[in-house]
Length: 380
Image 1 (spheres, rainbow, N blue to C red):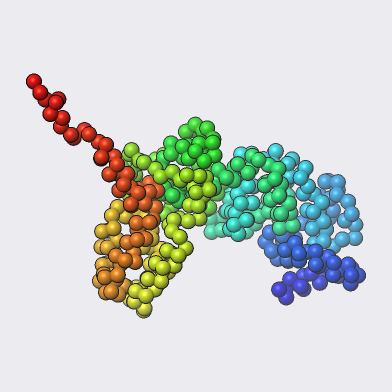
Image 2: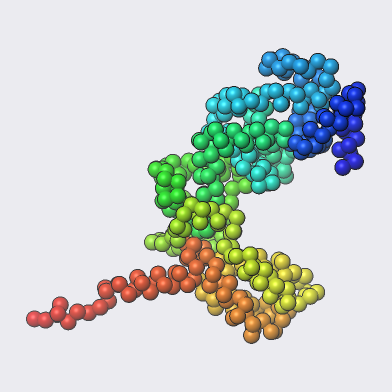
C-alpha cells in the first residue's frame, strides 16, 4: 500500500489539497491502484504524453490540457469508453475476438486470468499484457472501465450474454461427463439453451474455444470425442465407453451449471468430512511425503473413474502397504469412503452416480425379454 500512496502523491502533485483529496478518494473507491496490470496506467505505460494527446484528438476527447500523463490516461479511457464506443468495437470484432472479449470479462469476474493469442488492434476495451511460459499473453479489460463494460454486456448485449452462458454450459458438461460426443453436446445445448446446432456448428464452437482459450478450456478433442483434461482412461478405451452411452441430464440449466465449479460434485460437508478422515489416517512424515491435501485430489479423481468400489478398496490397501495410510483404514473406509463413491457423479457412468447407474441397469434388464423363452412359441 505504501507504493500506492507514493504513486498517488506523484499523480496529484500540483493540485490543491481539496482537489487532491477528492481525486484520490475517487480513484480508491473505483479500485484503481498504481502498478495494477489491468490499470490503463500500466496497460498504456509505453505511450508518451504526446501519444496520448494525439489519441485524445483523434477520438474527439477534450479537457486534457495541463494534465500529467497518468491523469491524462485515466481521462482518456473514461471519456472514450461509452456505450456507443463499446457497441462499435463489438460490431467490428470477429467471432474469435468476441469470444475472447467475453471470456476476458467472464474470467475477470472469476478472478482468473485469460491466456489467449487473440489480439485487439486499435481497440481500447481489451489489452494483452505479460506472457506465460508458452508465450501467450493475458487479456485484460482496463479496471477503470471494467464495471461499465460488464454493465453493457449484462444489460444490453443479449448475444454476448448467450455466448457466456453457452461457454459455461460447455464447461459444466465437460466436468460432469468427462468423456462425451458432439451429439451429446448438441443435445445439451438444445435442452438447456434451446439452441438448434448442427454437428458442424458444435465442432466449430468447440474448436473455437480451444483456439481462443487454450490454457483455460477444460477439455481436449480426441478423434471427435470431447475429453476432460482430468480423464485418465487410455485413448483406445474411448470408443468402448462412448458406445450406446446413456448420459445423466440434470433437470434445469442451473442444475447443469452446478457442475461448472463442482468437478467432484460433492457437497461441501462431504468434502470436509472426507478430508478430515484422510487427515486422521495419513501417516505423518511418510517416506513419500504425501499430504492429506494431495491424496484428497488423487483419491477423488480415482473415484471419478472407478467402475466398482473394489477398485478403491484395492488402492487403499496399497496405500496402507506403502506406509502412507494407517492400518485402521481397512476397518473404517467402508463407513467413510464408500458413501463418497456412491454419491459422486462418475465419468465412466456418463455423469450418473454408481447407485443411479445400477438402478438404470436393473431397469433395462428387467424389461429385456430377449432371453426369456415363451413356451407358446414352441408349440406344434
